[in-house]
Amino acid sequence: MNENTADLLNPQANFHDLETLVRGRVRDLIATILDEEITAALGAGSHERGSERRGYRHGHRPARKLVTSLGPVEIEVPRARMGVEDGTEEFQSQVVSRYRRRTRRVDAALLSCYLAGANSRKVKLALRPLVEGTALSRSALSRLVKRLKGLFHEWRERDLSQERYRFLIVDAMYLGVRLARRVVKVPVQAVVGVNDAGEKVLLDLRIAPSESLKAWEGVIEGLARRNLAAPELVVMDGNRGLVGAVRKLWPEARIQRCTNHKWENLKAKAPKHCHDELKRDYRAISHAEDGKTARKAHAAFLAKWRREVPEVARSLEEAGDDLLTFYEYPSEMWKSLRTSNVIERLNGEFRRRTKTQGSFPNEESALALLFGLVASGTIQMRKIDGYHRMPEVVENRAA
Image (cartoon, rainbow, N blue to C red; front, top):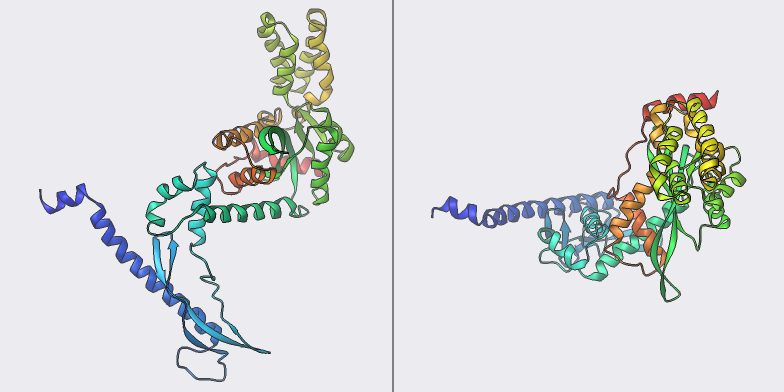
């Protein structure tokens, strides 16, 4: 076996040498950056004299390992005493802050592993090239999660006065959360907005004891308190609490009842043997060529099913014209506006990730995780169908 063959079968030998060289260069580069930082802060280099000097160096802090995206590097942070009005104070580096053991990029990688469902042991295995030879405890990951919770609270309270959303899609899903010493299924209310560029943006997440009128009023009141302007259209299921909250707090907003939710309602009212026929008649309403054709199909549906299964007809009547609002928008948008599938897909991704969690220790942990999945890009939302027609929608509403 020649040398090249041996290296090929055991590539870590060459890679290790290369990484050692790279890390050495990184260590030297960090030292240079830190020296430039402290020189700028002091107003003078090492051993330089001058009237602009603002303090004096005094050695280095004990060497420590800093985990970078190229692996762990041993560094020494220079120390200095800075002159202030009432004496001196210790210089604090902004490049490598005190007690920092990992760069932000590595922290982001650790948090991404957590959001993907990995525990601390799996995180160590996944990021072994980065964290090899360093301590990565459960408490380190816990501190990152605590930081994520802080970001979540800032996000949920941020001012929305400078943001404009034409459409809102609102729905809820159920997660297992430990409350009063017992794991119970609670509704997680989610709100997604569609801006003028057709981009979908997660606006709110909260847990409520139920999907009552008061619970949904709290969601919408919270958005209004954060100065969110009333949307033009709210897409939702038929939850009475949600419908009532929107009508009360945003009376000028239009409502689009989710056609998929209504189909499930109709199917539940009809005998199984007529489901195919019922679906064909219903699709003539929800997938018509235009609004005029849909209304004719709607009238025909009611006339037929009042005779066949009155409960089905009454269920359709309950939704009223709110089932057909999407026809007033460009046809390219109908697929996105006729249902709350935006939230359903988001909920599906949430459920897929939270299967590994089982249940959450408290409400805050559940909401922070869901927020982190979106904020980190682990879950991405594409633009609304027909987004290129959004300028036309904006112009028509302004007229």
